[in-house]
Amino acid sequence: SRPVMAESYLKPKADELARAVSSGDESEPEDKQPEKEEQTISVDPEDTDVDLNHCGLRKIQGLEGLTKVETLCLRQNYITKIECLETLTSLTDLDFYDNRLSRIENLDTLTELT
Picture 1 (cartoon, rainbow, N blue to C red):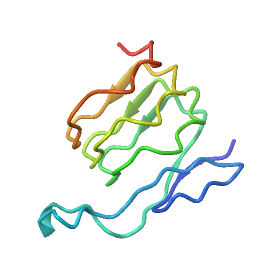
Picture 2: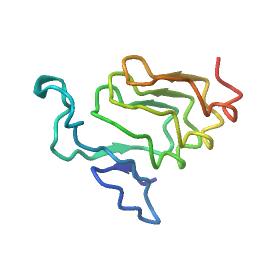
Picture 3: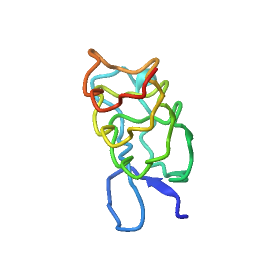
Picture 4: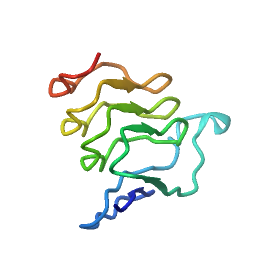
């Protein structure tokens, strides 16, 4: 199987998944900004446990192909909104610790979460 790819700017391809990793918020003090260089993160779409801890993520995108994932760790990122997870219906554990969320939303389709 092909890996899931996450790139700095979303460039969708038919045979892979992509998630955007964007640069820091200019309003943040310099020492609090995420790194501004582009990253590529590969994730096997067959994985049941996906750890994207401390990857500098600001937005969730392109994870639709992770149909077997049960555990998704998004700790210590810069995510401000829970979105684009509705197809991950096999998720039982979702971790957003230490992000920039102001509300918990868009989890209605994730009925297996415990």
